[in-house]
Length: 419
Image (cartoon, rainbow, N blue to C red; front, side, top):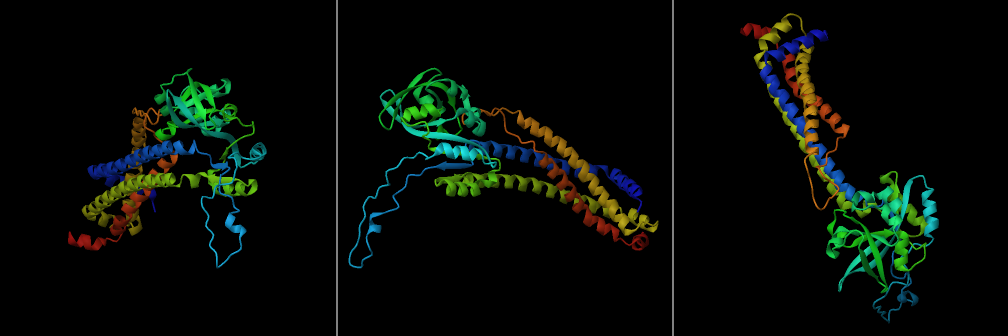
């Protein structure tokens, strides 16, 4: 088989029907362009939405759950068929929400090569004093350095920084929602009342906005030391251990393992956010489905054009066969036409798709819910471009294969005799 000769004949047939060739190539180009732009935008949006949860949620959370006493009063009596035992308002046993031996557990976790880091936290329920009104809230005492390294706290701070918590005694970073209600500014002093009735004054060093309005109306951040002072507890009093792993897929397995080893409650990120992950999967699936549908539609266009070309070029096919070209040669001539359209149309689609994605990337997008986002999110993952060009070539190959097989079976004697 003379591939150079076959390629030359394919090129000649393409140029002879240049208008149809351009239409088919434009169909492929449009499909690839929309596939790239749609997938880049949708996955970029998914990444932003995921970051609201994944960046702020530990892969594994260890905590001490307050629960009822395992030894219930009825268990102290032997079963009896003559008597009935009624239990009313059984209370949880007296306990604290702190994690026992927290410092030893932290040290052990940090030595685990599967763990990226551990950020201790103390959550304390308080009342924000706004004039004569008390608003319920939660103060989260954190290690500013670890919290920012593992959970990107600074990305959600609109004014100030997490470093201010480390450098300022009794500093607090207020959620945007509660800060607006209190009409607070940087440097103001706010008063909070603990559940034990103690009033504490804290200096505002920043504001954060997570994108979840209800969360921002309740939560605020202080240093772990400040939170322990507010709660009037010891320096080893910690209510949560937030663990980030090198491999997030190990979270369910490690959560069960840590629960068994340390004897405390553990929850993994998949269990805590299963509905959110389902939404991300569905959005990505829709994006791929729409893009692939566009490519299939373009493939049908190429199929129809090649069918018409074969019908119009019956004389040419007969002459080629009469001069010694085999059915396999004829088949590859028309497959070559399809691959030419698919390749060059696909490459043009990749270029235009990238340009369109770049244009989307600079379009202003401002929302109160996501203050750190200024333009529409776009994901320039090279894998999308590889999928697009591969699917373009495969689709156009299949679109050209069946008409080419039909052309290879043409009997030149019947065609010439008909003429």
